[in-house]
Image (cartoon, rainbow, N blue to C red):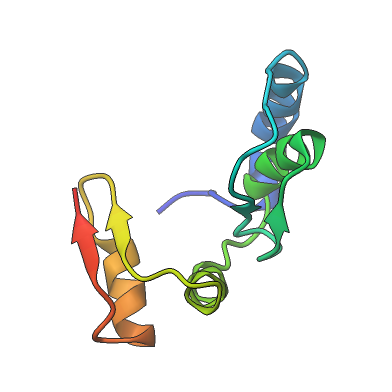
Length: 101
């Protein structure tokens, strides 16, 4: 447990915003669906702003995954030691293929 995605992360969000000022993000070929507002984004400045917001905003995983499915997502890959995303997908759609890497 931790203070992740709460106002307690504001100091880290400010530092991330500062770091992102000098970070180049190019327009993605595929829009980035933010789990802050569940909206596809292609503008690099908007993507930077949303990355910083993500530290203090609730994560809308379920809505994000449903949105991605609605946009044609047919398979998901979860990278890392856990299976959190696979578990969320199982609550949404038990048949949806999620591979843990």
